[in-house]
Image 1 (cartoon, rainbow, N blue to C red):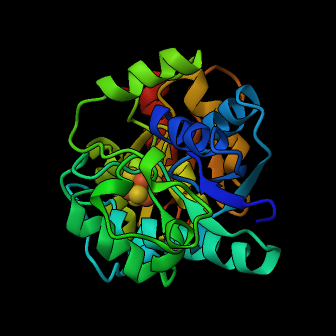
Image 2 (cartoon, rainbow, N blue to C red):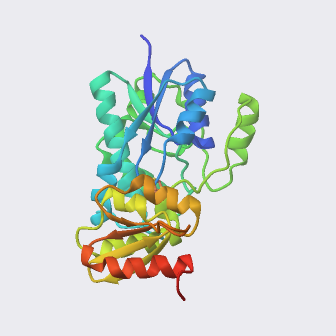
Length: 290
Ligand code: SF4
């Protein structure tokens, strides 16, 4: 058999690292990809792929996420996280790249039963089916609990050396990390769509026709949010960091900053006629008037 090549979804979290190393230890040529969007970044993926010396690429998943948020076929999780369709879409993209570029299979660090909605055994199977690459999608950490995949059938991967992890405990992965001698970050917290506070803001955008855009999804990470009318919101910075965040992202939106004294940056999204209301808010928070 020639060289076996695999392409993995790689968040940079412990599970994705262990999955990649498990395959690498079988002599498989492993490459990884990290997805990015206004809701999650590829920073950890980039950093930890370097640490493991894995060839890495970034995939911009913004357009897919914005479409999914409008009507996820499998619904949302606890917050505005369309995890099942999100994962399926990621694997569909990886599967397409694998077919186009000659990888033998794709993989991820998912563990059966680790998360209530998206990673119970049924959901893993559903995600695989929805991706269109069910036969080529390997989950090395739970493989022995899941149906056998193409690369295992073909002998490209030794199923016996894969794992049967399930549940929320990370102890086995931590033990393996020690054996491999790798540093890792604590899991979770990477996706804004699981953050109730951010999702509260996002739901305001979702209620207003035309406002659910990638840039607005980035803008609402900063400052206080106010709904000014049925079609207009504004953001008012709470700190220098908020102000800088807003100023770095605005393009066509109306922005208001006090010239003669420090104060919050205000951004209007929607009807420009509402500018006086924004000015009033900025002046109030700057202490110009009470
Ligand atoms: S947590 Fe966020 S990035 Fe992860 S699958 Fe769910 S929606 Fe996608």
